[in-house]
Length: 256
Figure 1: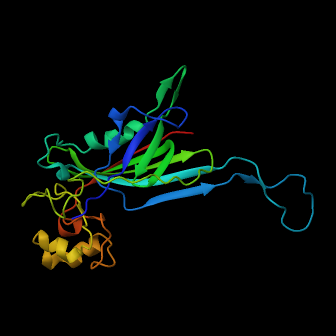
Figure 2 (figure 1 turned 90 degrees about the horizontal axis):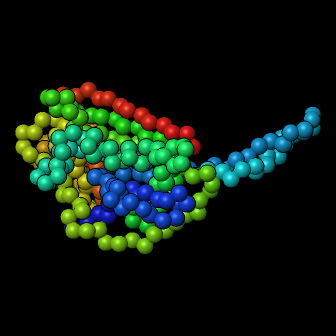
Figure 3 (figure 1 turned 135 degrees about the horizontal axis):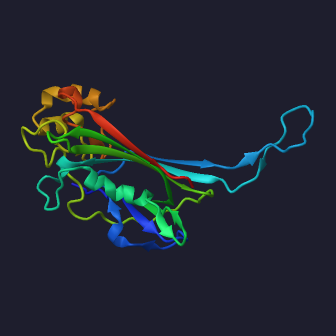
């Protein structure tokens, strides 16, 4: 089975040119399902148009902005059997929050430069905002699953950058349902990545839930269970099949 390349978050120098501090680079646990890139030019309506009829022309007055929006998932259950497994998902998400934390530069604090890399896709910017939603808690109150949504921005319209792709390392792709243990409580089983050419029915059958695939499809908002995108995240033990736990959210925002 083909392996999947994993997205990475890397730190850049102040000039957004060189990658630095490789020890702080973060490899995502699950690849995002979508990436949203938006562009906006800074325009304004000229003053002094008086009572002239018609709509006055708008003029380009600034460099514009480019933004990237990403949502990532983290799951303690996906680390079962690993030597560095943790019991609190925030020990995983803090690696992303590291990039929104301003660093002292002289007499002021500034957020670091960030590069998001995934295969041939690359985006450089400053982490403008970050929101963390915590889902499923253990008996002692430790969060087990979380989603992290963040946006990167640059004060200019950036050109598309196409990186040369490299083969993903062996074992980068997890088979559907791998790492889950029978009888685990809701929220401790990892999200499963759909394999190439996989269907929801086959993924459900692999975990002994072949008679529940329709409920799983509904809970995951899957319109076509017979054709899943490679790497698509699927919760094979969603709240619809069990008693949901409370959620909490934390948001950060930094001005640019």
